[in-house]
Image (tube, rainbow, N blue to C red; front, side, top):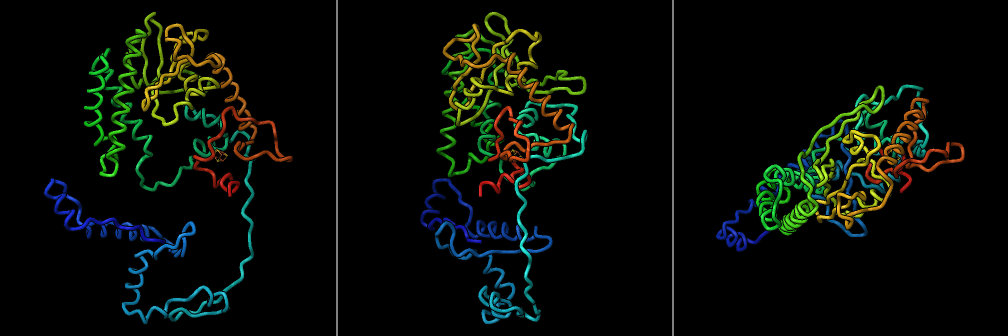
Length: 414
Ligand code: SF4
């Protein structure tokens, strides 16, 4: 444990800020809140609490955490009493038996146990893992990238710990971006660039406290302005593109369901559905991402989500409708080549009709493997004794997976 530094303001600075109408929280309140957070963590320990005092972190010497001072004070008001319940590591190493307070301890040698090796092929009973009644693009993406991750998430229902945390920043920004887009589309079908930019700014200010409160913190001022500016520009670009291409958006966040197989339904919520100048249905998926090229690359290789949503929306199995990604952060627009969308935005890649067949085959292959009793953790390398035949349709995202400790992928990186 090491104590984070508490940044303080001088009383002169505080009084100046006070005159300017800025009221800072009193330092003692900040300290009390911080101390309460350590207490809370300690109270959650229901069997044993083990605390460490590292002398260095990343090679840097660090001060002892103030929590230790509280513990010491609670146990021994007088420093001389500390020795009664303290034992140094070197003493522990030297002596087989020792006494702490009035309790005697005896050290025992434990036999070392090896951490299990990462497992690629998990054997389970046949027909114990079956498709869900309703699948989604997210579940299919997981299935065709790592069958073990899909099984743990949707069949075993193993969830990550429920520690309270603020959602990831891109999730917050994606939410507010989608909300603003939805309101703009509902308010008007066409917008001029300057008016949409102004309205986006107003909506950003109105919705930030509700959907992106962390951005309102003092230290996030520059970021908040940056995000506001980016959204204003991207919305202006988006509505200019719609106007020039003659595209009208009719629905946002629409939920659709379609039969995938005899026993499975497929359900999805589509971001933006509209009509092109020639009267064709168009699907646009809005994304907030700092890496727009990732989505361009998906169109050029395989976009599982867009292919599935296209299949969900289309009435004819043989016609490819115009589809595109709109990047909320930077305003980029990437579409499958289609005569109703200006060619500047086209990205060459496999047709969505071919892609859906590829996805269907991969889903069926994994399901049949699962029903035979084999679950593959595709992020673990194959070995001679195991099958080398399974190739995931999309690379598993092991770095962001909650199951790294279960399959052993985390141990591979150490
Ligand atoms: S860490 Fe990788 S291999 Fe392991 S379950 Fe997750 S996606 Fe699969």
